[in-house]
Length: 119
Image 1 (cartoon, helix red, strand yellow):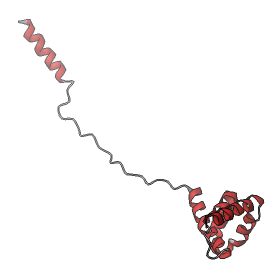
Image 2 (spheres, helix red, strand yellow):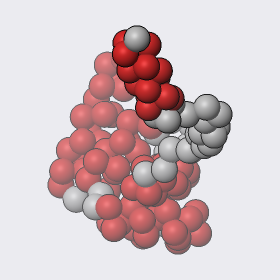
Image 3 (cartoon, one colour):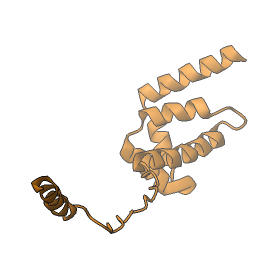
Image 4 (tube, one colour):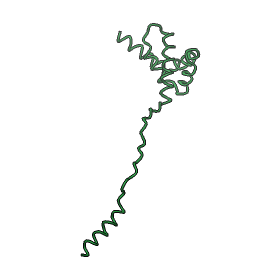
């Protein structure tokens, strides 16, 4: 007779541990975040456009992409930022300064030789 009483007491004790109507857990929707743009990449991209236009003015009709690459490789981040900020109107002096460096001149000479070899 004691066993049913013990089981009843145990069942009642355990029933207090069970949540009858659990509250719904709020689900926070995940909002996709846009990738944070790399400011250096944005500056480099803008500077590349300006330098490409400047090189095209100096070498009309030529594929200036390799020469632009030479200027980009030999410019500092600050110079590229200045070129990007100046735009087409004020970039000629900065581009000329970078082109006049020996390493840039060598790079451009190599690019020109490669272009002649491919032609």
